[in-house]
Image (cartoon, rainbow, N blue to C red; front, side):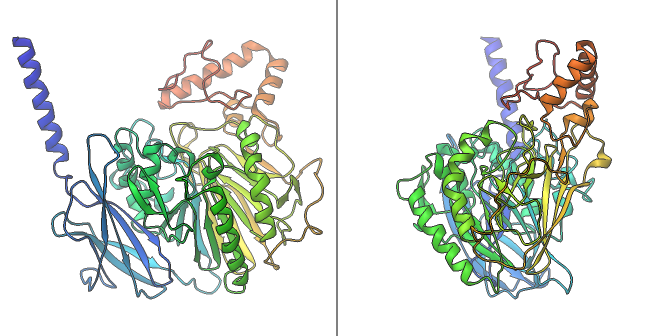
Length: 552
Protein backbone atom coordinates (compact mmCIF):
# COMPACT_ATOMS: atom_id res chain seq x y z
CA UNK A 1 0.00 0.00 0.00
CA UNK A 2 2.87 2.38 0.86
CA UNK A 3 4.51 1.71 -2.50
CA UNK A 4 1.19 2.30 -4.27
CA UNK A 5 0.76 5.58 -2.39
CA UNK A 6 4.27 6.73 -3.28
CA UNK A 7 3.63 5.80 -6.93
CA UNK A 8 0.38 7.79 -6.84
CA UNK A 9 2.14 10.83 -5.32
CA UNK A 10 4.93 10.53 -7.90
CA UNK A 11 2.41 10.43 -10.72
CA UNK A 12 0.65 13.50 -9.37
CA UNK A 13 3.96 15.36 -9.13
CA UNK A 14 4.80 14.45 -12.74
CA UNK A 15 1.37 15.69 -13.81
CA UNK A 16 1.85 18.97 -11.96
CA UNK A 17 5.24 19.47 -13.57
CA UNK A 18 3.74 18.75 -17.00
CA UNK A 19 0.90 21.18 -16.41
CA UNK A 20 3.33 23.84 -15.23
CA UNK A 21 5.24 23.45 -18.49
CA UNK A 22 2.24 23.57 -20.81
CA UNK A 23 -0.12 25.66 -18.72
CA UNK A 24 1.20 28.89 -20.17
CA UNK A 25 0.30 27.61 -23.63
CA UNK A 26 -3.27 26.67 -22.77
CA UNK A 27 -5.51 29.36 -24.18
CA UNK A 28 -2.61 30.98 -26.02
CA UNK A 29 -2.87 31.96 -29.67
CA UNK A 30 -0.59 29.72 -31.74
CA UNK A 31 0.02 27.93 -35.03
CA UNK A 32 -0.57 31.04 -37.16
CA UNK A 33 -0.52 30.68 -40.95
CA UNK A 34 -1.45 33.10 -43.71
CA UNK A 35 -2.73 32.30 -47.22
CA UNK A 36 -3.69 34.01 -50.43
CA UNK A 37 -7.41 34.68 -50.49
CA UNK A 38 -9.90 35.03 -53.32
CA UNK A 39 -9.01 38.52 -54.54
CA UNK A 40 -5.78 40.43 -55.11
CA UNK A 41 -6.61 42.74 -52.20
CA UNK A 42 -7.13 40.08 -49.54
CA UNK A 43 -5.21 37.58 -47.39
CA UNK A 44 -6.65 34.99 -45.01
CA UNK A 45 -5.25 33.90 -41.65
CA UNK A 46 -5.90 30.79 -39.58
CA UNK A 47 -4.77 30.04 -36.04
CA UNK A 48 -5.41 27.69 -33.13
CA UNK A 49 -6.27 27.96 -29.46
CA UNK A 50 -6.65 25.12 -26.99
CA UNK A 51 -9.58 26.87 -25.29
CA UNK A 52 -12.72 28.62 -26.49
CA UNK A 53 -12.48 32.40 -26.61
CA UNK A 54 -14.27 35.56 -27.56
CA UNK A 55 -14.95 36.74 -31.08
CA UNK A 56 -11.81 35.98 -33.13
CA UNK A 57 -10.32 38.85 -35.08
CA UNK A 58 -7.35 39.93 -37.13
CA UNK A 59 -5.82 43.39 -36.70
CA UNK A 60 -3.56 44.91 -39.33
CA UNK A 61 -1.86 48.04 -40.54
CA UNK A 62 1.07 49.34 -42.57
CA UNK A 63 3.10 50.26 -39.48
CA UNK A 64 4.16 48.06 -36.57
CA UNK A 65 2.31 49.22 -33.48
CA UNK A 66 -0.43 50.90 -35.51
CA UNK A 67 -2.84 48.11 -36.44
CA UNK A 68 -5.72 50.35 -37.42
CA UNK A 69 -7.86 47.84 -39.34
CA UNK A 70 -9.86 45.00 -37.79
CA UNK A 71 -11.95 42.14 -39.18
CA UNK A 72 -13.92 39.54 -37.24
CA UNK A 73 -13.53 35.87 -38.07
CA UNK A 74 -15.17 32.60 -37.19
CA UNK A 75 -14.28 29.78 -34.79
CA UNK A 76 -14.81 26.04 -35.06
CA UNK A 77 -14.43 23.44 -32.35
CA UNK A 78 -12.43 20.30 -33.18
CA UNK A 79 -13.72 17.18 -31.39
CA UNK A 80 -12.22 14.25 -33.33
CA UNK A 81 -9.11 13.82 -31.16
CA UNK A 82 -9.98 11.46 -28.27
CA UNK A 83 -9.96 13.16 -24.89
CA UNK A 84 -9.29 16.71 -26.08
CA UNK A 85 -11.10 19.63 -27.63
CA UNK A 86 -9.46 22.57 -29.40
CA UNK A 87 -10.38 25.38 -31.75
CA UNK A 88 -9.47 26.75 -35.17
CA UNK A 89 -10.12 30.38 -36.07
CA UNK A 90 -10.00 32.11 -39.44
CA UNK A 91 -10.32 35.70 -40.59
CA UNK A 92 -9.67 37.73 -43.75
CA UNK A 93 -7.69 40.93 -44.19
CA UNK A 94 -9.26 42.83 -47.09
CA UNK A 95 -8.92 46.06 -49.07
CA UNK A 96 -5.16 45.56 -49.11
CA UNK A 97 -2.92 47.32 -51.58
CA UNK A 98 -0.85 45.01 -53.82
CA UNK A 99 2.87 45.36 -53.29
CA UNK A 100 2.45 46.61 -49.72
CA UNK A 101 3.74 45.06 -46.49
CA UNK A 102 1.28 44.72 -43.63
CA UNK A 103 1.78 44.00 -39.94
CA UNK A 104 -0.89 41.88 -38.30
CA UNK A 105 -1.99 40.11 -35.11
CA UNK A 106 -4.72 37.53 -34.48
CA UNK A 107 -6.59 36.53 -31.34
CA UNK A 108 -9.52 37.40 -29.12
CA UNK A 109 -10.36 39.02 -25.81
CA UNK A 110 -10.12 35.81 -23.77
CA UNK A 111 -7.12 34.02 -25.30
CA UNK A 112 -5.18 37.20 -25.96
CA UNK A 113 -3.33 38.04 -29.15
CA UNK A 114 -0.44 36.61 -31.11
CA UNK A 115 2.90 38.22 -31.71
CA UNK A 116 2.95 40.72 -34.56
CA UNK A 117 3.81 39.24 -37.95
CA UNK A 118 4.55 40.92 -41.27
CA UNK A 119 3.37 39.79 -44.71
CA UNK A 120 3.64 41.21 -48.22
CA UNK A 121 0.40 41.36 -50.18
CA UNK A 122 1.13 40.24 -53.74
CA UNK A 123 4.49 41.84 -54.40
CA UNK A 124 5.06 43.50 -57.73
CA UNK A 125 8.62 42.62 -58.79
CA UNK A 126 10.87 45.36 -60.06
CA UNK A 127 11.77 45.28 -63.73
CA UNK A 128 13.89 42.22 -64.47
CA UNK A 129 13.11 40.60 -61.10
CA UNK A 130 11.02 37.41 -60.77
CA UNK A 131 8.20 36.22 -58.60
CA UNK A 132 9.66 33.51 -56.35
CA UNK A 133 7.51 30.49 -55.51
CA UNK A 134 8.83 27.76 -53.18
CA UNK A 135 7.50 24.23 -53.80
CA UNK A 136 7.88 21.08 -51.69
CA UNK A 137 5.98 18.12 -50.29
CA UNK A 138 6.03 15.43 -47.62
CA UNK A 139 7.36 17.27 -44.58
CA UNK A 140 6.96 15.91 -41.07
CA UNK A 141 7.14 17.44 -37.63
CA UNK A 142 10.24 15.33 -37.02
CA UNK A 143 12.76 15.07 -39.85
CA UNK A 144 11.69 18.42 -41.36
CA UNK A 145 15.18 18.69 -42.81
CA UNK A 146 14.23 21.26 -45.43
CA UNK A 147 12.95 23.74 -42.84
CA UNK A 148 16.42 24.43 -41.41
CA UNK A 149 19.71 22.70 -40.65
CA UNK A 150 18.78 22.14 -36.98
CA UNK A 151 15.76 19.88 -37.60
CA UNK A 152 16.36 16.27 -36.55
CA UNK A 153 14.61 12.93 -36.52
CA UNK A 154 14.92 12.72 -32.75
CA UNK A 155 12.51 15.58 -32.03
CA UNK A 156 9.15 16.76 -33.33
CA UNK A 157 10.10 20.29 -32.32
CA UNK A 158 11.84 22.43 -34.93
CA UNK A 159 10.41 25.88 -34.32
CA UNK A 160 11.76 29.40 -34.57
CA UNK A 161 13.96 28.92 -31.52
CA UNK A 162 15.38 25.67 -32.89
CA UNK A 163 16.21 27.25 -36.25
CA UNK A 164 17.52 30.57 -34.92
CA UNK A 165 21.15 29.45 -35.07
CA UNK A 166 21.22 29.42 -38.88
CA UNK A 167 18.58 31.13 -41.01
CA UNK A 168 20.77 31.55 -44.09
CA UNK A 169 19.70 28.29 -45.75
CA UNK A 170 16.59 26.13 -45.91
CA UNK A 171 13.00 27.30 -46.03
CA UNK A 172 13.68 29.76 -43.22
CA UNK A 173 16.06 31.62 -45.54
CA UNK A 174 13.45 32.16 -48.27
CA UNK A 175 12.17 35.35 -46.69
CA UNK A 176 11.69 37.03 -50.07
CA UNK A 177 9.44 34.25 -51.41
CA UNK A 178 6.04 35.37 -52.67
CA UNK A 179 4.40 32.06 -51.85
CA UNK A 180 5.14 28.58 -50.49
CA UNK A 181 3.32 25.51 -51.77
CA UNK A 182 3.19 22.25 -49.78
CA UNK A 183 1.86 19.47 -52.02
CA UNK A 184 0.47 17.13 -49.38
CA UNK A 185 1.57 14.91 -46.49
CA UNK A 186 1.87 17.02 -43.36
CA UNK A 187 3.37 16.26 -39.93
CA UNK A 188 3.24 12.42 -40.28
CA UNK A 189 0.51 12.67 -39.31
CA UNK A 190 -1.79 15.55 -38.41
CA UNK A 191 -3.93 13.28 -36.24
CA UNK A 192 -1.14 11.22 -34.65
CA UNK A 193 -0.99 11.13 -30.83
CA UNK A 194 -4.39 12.76 -30.50
CA UNK A 195 -3.39 15.52 -32.90
CA UNK A 196 -0.38 16.68 -30.89
CA UNK A 197 1.99 15.83 -33.75
CA UNK A 198 -0.10 18.12 -35.93
CA UNK A 199 0.19 20.82 -33.27
CA UNK A 200 3.99 20.56 -33.33
CA UNK A 201 4.06 20.68 -37.11
CA UNK A 202 2.06 23.91 -37.22
CA UNK A 203 4.18 25.42 -34.47
CA UNK A 204 7.26 24.52 -36.50
CA UNK A 205 6.08 26.06 -39.76
CA UNK A 206 4.74 29.24 -38.15
CA UNK A 207 8.22 30.75 -38.60
CA UNK A 208 7.60 30.72 -42.36
CA UNK A 209 3.83 30.26 -42.75
CA UNK A 210 2.89 33.35 -40.69
CA UNK A 211 5.14 35.54 -42.85
CA UNK A 212 4.70 34.10 -46.37
CA UNK A 213 1.43 32.83 -47.90
CA UNK A 214 1.45 29.05 -47.39
CA UNK A 215 -0.69 27.10 -49.87
CA UNK A 216 -1.45 23.37 -49.91
CA UNK A 217 -2.90 20.30 -51.55
CA UNK A 218 -4.21 17.09 -49.99
CA UNK A 219 -2.00 13.99 -49.58
CA UNK A 220 -2.50 10.32 -48.79
CA UNK A 221 -1.32 10.82 -45.20
CA UNK A 222 -4.46 12.90 -44.79
CA UNK A 223 -6.78 10.04 -45.84
CA UNK A 224 -7.79 8.43 -42.53
CA UNK A 225 -10.91 9.58 -40.73
CA UNK A 226 -8.94 11.61 -38.20
CA UNK A 227 -6.27 12.93 -40.57
CA UNK A 228 -8.83 13.98 -43.19
CA UNK A 229 -10.75 15.94 -40.55
CA UNK A 230 -7.51 17.59 -39.44
CA UNK A 231 -6.63 18.53 -43.02
CA UNK A 232 -10.02 20.03 -43.87
CA UNK A 233 -10.25 22.05 -40.65
CA UNK A 234 -6.59 23.08 -40.56
CA UNK A 235 -6.56 24.59 -44.05
CA UNK A 236 -9.95 26.27 -44.24
CA UNK A 237 -8.15 29.55 -44.90
CA UNK A 238 -7.49 28.35 -48.46
CA UNK A 239 -9.29 30.31 -51.26
CA UNK A 240 -11.94 27.65 -51.77
CA UNK A 241 -13.99 27.76 -54.98
CA UNK A 242 -14.85 24.06 -55.32
CA UNK A 243 -18.18 22.65 -56.41
CA UNK A 244 -19.66 21.44 -54.14
CA UNK A 245 -18.42 24.21 -51.82
CA UNK A 246 -18.36 22.13 -48.62
CA UNK A 247 -16.97 18.77 -47.52
CA UNK A 248 -18.12 16.66 -44.57
CA UNK A 249 -15.64 14.94 -42.27
CA UNK A 250 -15.97 13.36 -38.83
CA UNK A 251 -15.75 16.89 -37.45
CA UNK A 252 -18.69 18.21 -39.49
CA UNK A 253 -19.17 20.29 -42.63
CA UNK A 254 -16.40 22.72 -43.61
CA UNK A 255 -15.11 24.48 -46.74
CA UNK A 256 -14.11 22.03 -49.47
CA UNK A 257 -10.33 22.17 -49.89
CA UNK A 258 -9.92 18.91 -51.82
CA UNK A 259 -9.71 21.04 -54.97
CA UNK A 260 -9.59 24.79 -55.54
CA UNK A 261 -7.68 27.36 -57.57
CA UNK A 262 -6.17 30.82 -57.39
CA UNK A 263 -3.97 33.23 -59.30
CA UNK A 264 -0.67 34.63 -58.14
CA UNK A 265 1.06 37.06 -60.44
CA UNK A 266 1.55 35.32 -63.78
CA UNK A 267 0.55 31.84 -62.60
CA UNK A 268 -2.84 30.15 -62.27
CA UNK A 269 -2.62 27.39 -59.65
CA UNK A 270 -5.03 24.47 -59.40
CA UNK A 271 -4.90 22.37 -56.23
CA UNK A 272 -6.29 18.85 -56.61
CA UNK A 273 -6.65 15.78 -54.42
CA UNK A 274 -5.25 12.71 -56.13
CA UNK A 275 -6.87 10.77 -53.26
CA UNK A 276 -10.19 11.07 -55.09
CA UNK A 277 -8.85 8.32 -57.40
CA UNK A 278 -8.39 6.09 -54.34
CA UNK A 279 -11.73 6.40 -52.60
CA UNK A 280 -11.67 9.61 -50.55
CA UNK A 281 -15.17 11.09 -50.70
CA UNK A 282 -18.05 12.35 -48.58
CA UNK A 283 -20.45 11.06 -51.27
CA UNK A 284 -20.99 14.64 -52.49
CA UNK A 285 -17.44 15.46 -53.55
CA UNK A 286 -16.40 12.71 -55.95
CA UNK A 287 -14.05 12.10 -58.86
CA UNK A 288 -16.98 13.00 -61.13
CA UNK A 289 -17.60 16.38 -59.48
CA UNK A 290 -13.87 17.05 -59.62
CA UNK A 291 -13.60 16.37 -63.35
CA UNK A 292 -16.56 18.65 -64.05
CA UNK A 293 -15.08 21.41 -61.90
CA UNK A 294 -11.47 21.21 -63.14
CA UNK A 295 -12.46 21.36 -66.81
CA UNK A 296 -14.52 24.49 -66.16
CA UNK A 297 -11.69 26.01 -64.14
CA UNK A 298 -9.06 25.35 -66.82
CA UNK A 299 -11.39 26.59 -69.53
CA UNK A 300 -11.72 29.89 -67.67
CA UNK A 301 -7.96 29.99 -67.08
CA UNK A 302 -7.29 29.62 -70.81
CA UNK A 303 -9.51 32.61 -71.53
CA UNK A 304 -7.31 34.63 -69.17
CA UNK A 305 -3.87 33.59 -70.41
CA UNK A 306 -3.07 37.02 -71.83
CA UNK A 307 -2.95 38.22 -68.21
CA UNK A 308 -2.04 34.97 -66.40
CA UNK A 309 -0.12 32.89 -68.96
CA UNK A 310 1.33 30.05 -66.86
CA UNK A 311 -0.88 27.24 -65.52
CA UNK A 312 0.25 24.85 -62.77
CA UNK A 313 -1.79 21.92 -61.50
CA UNK A 314 -0.56 20.32 -58.29
CA UNK A 315 -1.61 17.30 -56.28
CA UNK A 316 0.11 14.64 -54.23
CA UNK A 317 0.55 11.36 -56.08
CA UNK A 318 2.63 11.00 -59.21
CA UNK A 319 1.58 10.78 -62.82
CA UNK A 320 5.17 10.26 -63.98
CA UNK A 321 7.99 8.98 -61.76
CA UNK A 322 10.69 6.32 -61.88
CA UNK A 323 11.59 5.35 -58.32
CA UNK A 324 9.52 2.29 -57.40
CA UNK A 325 6.16 0.52 -57.66
CA UNK A 326 4.28 3.78 -56.92
CA UNK A 327 5.16 4.65 -60.51
CA UNK A 328 3.33 1.65 -61.94
CA UNK A 329 -0.36 0.93 -61.32
CA UNK A 330 -1.18 3.91 -59.09
CA UNK A 331 0.50 6.47 -61.31
CA UNK A 332 -1.00 4.89 -64.43
CA UNK A 333 -4.48 4.98 -62.89
CA UNK A 334 -4.21 8.76 -62.49
CA UNK A 335 -2.37 9.30 -65.79
CA UNK A 336 -5.03 7.65 -67.93
CA UNK A 337 -7.69 10.17 -66.91
CA UNK A 338 -5.68 13.25 -65.89
CA UNK A 339 -3.00 13.48 -68.57
CA UNK A 340 -5.51 14.16 -71.39
CA UNK A 341 -6.99 17.05 -69.37
CA UNK A 342 -3.57 18.56 -68.69
CA UNK A 343 -2.66 18.25 -72.37
CA UNK A 344 -5.94 19.52 -73.80
CA UNK A 345 -5.87 22.65 -71.64
CA UNK A 346 -2.18 23.34 -72.10
CA UNK A 347 -1.13 22.98 -68.45
CA UNK A 348 2.53 23.92 -68.20
CA UNK A 349 3.47 21.97 -65.05
CA UNK A 350 2.05 19.20 -62.91
CA UNK A 351 3.67 19.27 -59.45
CA UNK A 352 3.38 16.51 -56.85
CA UNK A 353 5.04 14.87 -53.87
CA UNK A 354 4.42 11.34 -52.51
CA UNK A 355 7.78 10.01 -53.69
CA UNK A 356 10.42 11.18 -51.21
CA UNK A 357 12.69 12.40 -53.92
CA UNK A 358 12.88 14.91 -56.76
CA UNK A 359 12.30 14.18 -60.42
CA UNK A 360 11.75 16.58 -63.31
CA UNK A 361 10.62 15.30 -66.69
CA UNK A 362 11.10 16.72 -70.14
CA UNK A 363 7.86 17.90 -71.79
CA UNK A 364 6.05 14.55 -71.88
CA UNK A 365 2.91 13.11 -73.40
CA UNK A 366 1.88 9.45 -73.34
CA UNK A 367 5.39 8.46 -72.18
CA UNK A 368 6.99 10.18 -75.16
CA UNK A 369 9.15 13.26 -74.70
CA UNK A 370 11.00 16.06 -76.42
CA UNK A 371 14.31 16.65 -74.71
CA UNK A 372 14.01 20.44 -74.81
CA UNK A 373 12.45 23.05 -72.53
CA UNK A 374 12.11 25.62 -75.33
CA UNK A 375 8.45 26.06 -76.30
CA UNK A 376 7.30 22.76 -74.74
CA UNK A 377 4.67 20.85 -76.70
CA UNK A 378 3.39 19.02 -73.62
CA UNK A 379 3.21 19.25 -69.83
CA UNK A 380 6.32 19.02 -67.64
CA UNK A 381 5.86 16.74 -64.60
CA UNK A 382 7.79 17.41 -61.40
CA UNK A 383 8.00 15.31 -58.24
CA UNK A 384 9.22 17.39 -55.29
CA UNK A 385 8.40 15.26 -52.25
CA UNK A 386 11.74 15.38 -50.45
CA UNK A 387 11.18 17.96 -47.71
CA UNK A 388 11.86 15.33 -45.04
CA UNK A 389 9.88 12.88 -42.93
CA UNK A 390 10.51 9.85 -40.74
CA UNK A 391 10.07 7.65 -43.82
CA UNK A 392 13.39 9.14 -44.95
CA UNK A 393 14.81 8.81 -48.48
CA UNK A 394 13.14 6.92 -51.28
CA UNK A 395 15.50 4.79 -53.37
CA UNK A 396 15.45 4.64 -57.16
CA UNK A 397 14.79 1.01 -58.01
CA UNK A 398 14.20 1.60 -61.71
CA UNK A 399 16.62 2.76 -64.40
CA UNK A 400 16.17 6.42 -65.35
CA UNK A 401 13.78 6.69 -68.32
CA UNK A 402 14.61 8.94 -71.25
CA UNK A 403 11.70 11.26 -70.34
CA UNK A 404 13.30 11.91 -66.93
CA UNK A 405 15.49 15.00 -67.28
CA UNK A 406 16.84 14.97 -63.71
CA UNK A 407 16.25 12.99 -60.56
CA UNK A 408 17.68 13.02 -57.04
CA UNK A 409 16.75 11.39 -53.75
CA UNK A 410 18.57 13.70 -51.38
CA UNK A 411 16.28 15.94 -49.32
CA UNK A 412 15.49 19.13 -51.21
CA UNK A 413 12.95 21.76 -52.25
CA UNK A 414 12.11 23.66 -55.43
CA UNK A 415 12.50 27.31 -56.38
CA UNK A 416 10.26 28.38 -59.26
CA UNK A 417 11.17 31.92 -60.33
CA UNK A 418 8.67 33.43 -62.76
CA UNK A 419 10.35 36.25 -64.69
CA UNK A 420 7.67 37.06 -67.23
CA UNK A 421 5.12 35.49 -69.57
CA UNK A 422 7.80 33.50 -71.38
CA UNK A 423 10.60 32.62 -68.94
CA UNK A 424 10.73 30.56 -65.72
CA UNK A 425 13.98 29.78 -63.90
CA UNK A 426 13.82 26.43 -62.08
CA UNK A 427 16.15 25.26 -59.30
CA UNK A 428 16.27 22.34 -56.90
CA UNK A 429 18.00 23.07 -53.59
CA UNK A 430 19.58 20.25 -51.56
CA UNK A 431 18.73 20.35 -47.84
CA UNK A 432 20.04 17.03 -46.59
CA UNK A 433 21.92 17.11 -43.26
CA UNK A 434 21.71 13.37 -42.67
CA UNK A 435 25.00 12.03 -44.03
CA UNK A 436 26.19 14.89 -46.19
CA UNK A 437 28.48 17.74 -45.09
CA UNK A 438 26.63 20.87 -44.02
CA UNK A 439 28.54 22.70 -46.74
CA UNK A 440 26.29 20.87 -49.22
CA UNK A 441 23.11 22.09 -47.48
CA UNK A 442 21.61 24.82 -49.65
CA UNK A 443 23.48 23.98 -52.84
CA UNK A 444 21.59 23.93 -56.15
CA UNK A 445 21.59 20.45 -57.68
CA UNK A 446 19.29 21.09 -60.65
CA UNK A 447 19.21 24.37 -62.55
CA UNK A 448 17.29 24.97 -65.77
CA UNK A 449 15.06 27.44 -67.65
CA UNK A 450 11.69 26.98 -69.30
CA UNK A 451 10.78 29.19 -72.25
CA UNK A 452 7.23 29.21 -73.61
CA UNK A 453 6.07 31.69 -76.26
CA UNK A 454 2.81 29.92 -77.08
CA UNK A 455 0.67 29.41 -74.00
CA UNK A 456 -2.59 27.54 -74.49
CA UNK A 457 -3.92 24.09 -75.38
CA UNK A 458 -1.34 21.69 -76.76
CA UNK A 459 -1.75 20.25 -80.24
CA UNK A 460 -1.59 16.49 -80.74
CA UNK A 461 0.05 16.95 -84.12
CA UNK A 462 2.94 18.74 -82.41
CA UNK A 463 3.06 16.51 -79.31
CA UNK A 464 6.18 14.45 -78.54
CA UNK A 465 6.06 11.29 -80.64
CA UNK A 466 9.27 9.46 -79.85
CA UNK A 467 10.80 7.53 -76.97
CA UNK A 468 14.45 8.59 -77.07
CA UNK A 469 16.88 5.70 -76.69
CA UNK A 470 19.39 7.82 -74.78
CA UNK A 471 19.55 11.09 -72.89
CA UNK A 472 22.97 12.74 -72.85
CA UNK A 473 21.49 15.82 -71.16
CA UNK A 474 19.73 13.92 -68.36
CA UNK A 475 21.07 14.11 -64.82
CA UNK A 476 20.83 12.09 -61.62
CA UNK A 477 21.98 12.51 -58.02
CA UNK A 478 21.35 9.42 -55.90
CA UNK A 479 22.29 9.80 -52.24
CA UNK A 480 23.73 6.28 -52.18
CA UNK A 481 26.19 6.71 -55.03
CA UNK A 482 28.57 9.27 -53.47
CA UNK A 483 28.34 7.65 -50.03
CA UNK A 484 29.20 4.23 -51.41
CA UNK A 485 31.71 5.53 -53.93
CA UNK A 486 29.67 4.29 -56.88
CA UNK A 487 29.76 5.98 -60.30
CA UNK A 488 27.34 8.92 -60.67
CA UNK A 489 25.27 9.99 -63.65
CA UNK A 490 24.90 6.54 -65.17
CA UNK A 491 21.10 6.59 -65.20
CA UNK A 492 21.10 3.12 -63.69
CA UNK A 493 19.12 2.20 -60.59
CA UNK A 494 21.18 2.04 -57.41
CA UNK A 495 20.60 -1.69 -56.99
CA UNK A 496 22.07 -2.23 -60.46
CA UNK A 497 25.21 -0.32 -59.48
CA UNK A 498 25.46 -2.35 -56.28
CA UNK A 499 25.08 -5.64 -58.17
CA UNK A 500 27.79 -4.58 -60.59
CA UNK A 501 30.09 -3.55 -57.72
CA UNK A 502 29.59 -6.85 -55.89
CA UNK A 503 30.20 -8.90 -59.03
CA UNK A 504 33.35 -6.95 -59.86
CA UNK A 505 34.86 -6.53 -56.37
CA UNK A 506 33.43 -9.37 -54.31
CA UNK A 507 31.29 -9.63 -51.18
CA UNK A 508 34.04 -8.64 -48.75
CA UNK A 509 34.58 -5.32 -50.52
CA UNK A 510 30.83 -4.69 -50.47
CA UNK A 511 30.48 -5.53 -46.78
CA UNK A 512 33.37 -3.20 -46.00
CA UNK A 513 31.50 -0.38 -47.73
CA UNK A 514 28.39 -1.18 -45.69
CA UNK A 515 30.34 -1.34 -42.42
CA UNK A 516 31.97 2.02 -43.15
CA UNK A 517 28.58 3.52 -43.92
CA UNK A 518 27.11 2.01 -40.76
CA UNK A 519 29.81 3.69 -38.69
CA UNK A 520 28.95 7.02 -40.29
CA UNK A 521 25.23 6.43 -39.72
CA UNK A 522 25.76 5.61 -36.05
CA UNK A 523 28.02 8.63 -35.55
CA UNK A 524 25.32 10.93 -36.97
CA UNK A 525 22.43 9.19 -35.11
CA UNK A 526 20.27 8.93 -38.20
CA UNK A 527 18.35 6.14 -39.85
CA UNK A 528 19.31 4.80 -43.22
CA UNK A 529 17.50 2.75 -45.81
CA UNK A 530 18.08 -0.09 -48.19
CA UNK A 531 17.60 -0.02 -51.94
CA UNK A 532 15.38 -3.05 -52.30
CA UNK A 533 14.07 -3.62 -55.80
CA UNK A 534 10.51 -3.26 -54.53
CA UNK A 535 11.23 0.26 -53.35
CA UNK A 536 10.76 -0.39 -49.64
CA UNK A 537 13.05 1.13 -47.03
CA UNK A 538 13.02 -1.75 -44.58
CA UNK A 539 16.75 -2.42 -44.17
CA UNK A 540 17.19 -5.50 -46.30
CA UNK A 541 20.70 -6.09 -44.93
CA UNK A 542 19.63 -6.26 -41.31
CA UNK A 543 20.83 -9.86 -41.16
CA UNK A 544 24.37 -8.77 -41.94
CA UNK A 545 24.54 -5.44 -40.13
CA UNK A 546 22.72 -3.93 -37.19
CA UNK A 547 21.62 -0.49 -38.33
CA UNK A 548 21.06 2.20 -35.71
CA UNK A 549 17.69 3.92 -35.70
CA UNK A 550 14.05 3.49 -34.81
CA UNK A 551 13.35 1.36 -37.89
CA UNK A 552 16.32 -0.98 -37.48
